[in-house]
Image (cartoon, rainbow, N blue to C red; front, top):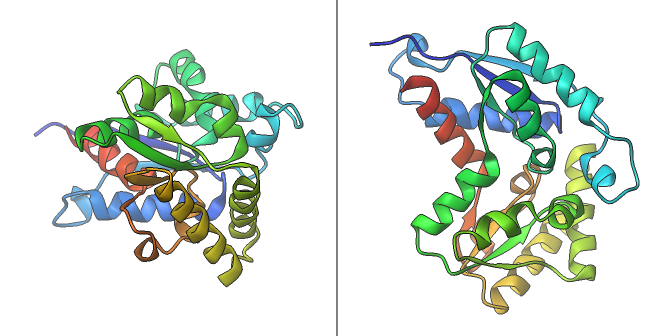
Length: 230
């Protein structure tokens, strides 16, 4: 059996989401002992400027910080790159190519899963930057999946919940907000709700949404385990 490939996790965006992703990677790895798990180097830099603000033209470009992290993972010997931040995928594919790392894209793996399940319409809960950049819209439409996004009031509630998770202050009102926005997407025809920001799954009670909630972080973890152990 060949040696597993070393995985680099570009994290810190935010810290809680990075911890959540690593836990899911452990859960999704078919290992019977410590030595059967995926070898990982985590670059957790919370100083990366806000990706969403940058994409809407109201914040610093995070590219230099992301490049520094990817180059650090490359120097550490990583071959596979995982980025458990959806919005960062507006920047990282080009940087991964520059570094010669194989990017396991959280966007593409999620779009593949929805298409494989025959989903025709998916609601997307994400940062405003992710929506403005069209990351999921483009990937899903290429696969024939209609994208349903919140209106402005709903999007404000989504962003409030994301910010609350990042600050450690998520409470019942944020959970209720995400639940109600999710239900509104279902009312408009969504067959799945995609938690397309890695903080959302930390605040949304999926059992209270009338259709399955898709967790891109778990799908990414599953894909990373496959790439590392193939």
